[in-house]
Length: 166
Image 1 (cartoon, one colour):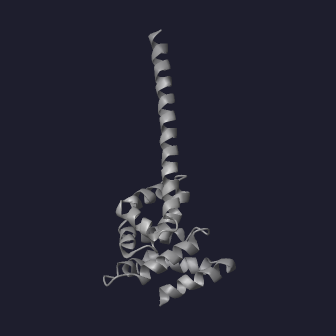
Image 2 (cartoon, rainbow, N blue to C red):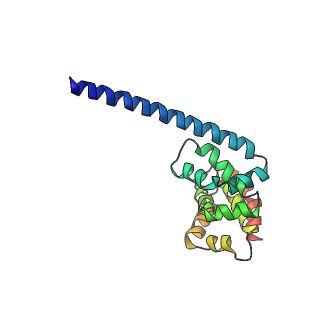
Image 3 (cartoon, rainbow, N blue to C red):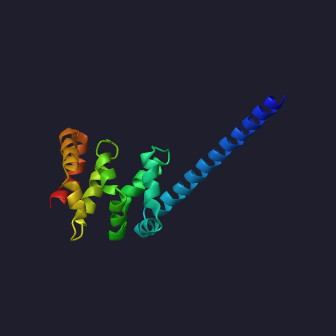
C-alpha cells in the first residue's frame, strides 16, 4: 500500500514540475517576444539590452536550438548595427563566430554576412574582428559560402561583400 502511495506522490510531483516548466517556457517566450518588439527598430534599446547582459542569453537560446531562437537570431543580427559598445559585446560573446556559422543557413546567410560587414567596417584600431575573420576556419567558411551561393542570393550578398572588401 505504501508503494502505491509513493508512486502516486511521485506522479503528482512530476505533473506539477511539468506544468511549472511549461509556465516558465511560456514566460520566456512572452518576455523575449516583448524584447524583440521593443528592440527591433530601436538601436538605443538594442544597446540598452546589450548593456543589461542579454547577449549571452540570446546566444544560449540559439546554441540549444530553442524555439526562442526565432526571436534571438534577428535581434543578434540587428545588434551589429546598433553601436560600438553593442558590437564589442557581440564580439566578446562569440557573435562573430555565430555570424560565420549562419553562413551555412540559407535563410540567415545574407543577414549574417551583412552583420559581419558592419562589424568589420566598425572595427576599432585593435582590429579584433579582422583578426577573427583572418583565421583559417573563418576564411574557409567565407570561401565555401561564396562558392556555394545560389544565383538568387548572389545579388543580395554584393552590398555586404563590397563593405567587407573596402
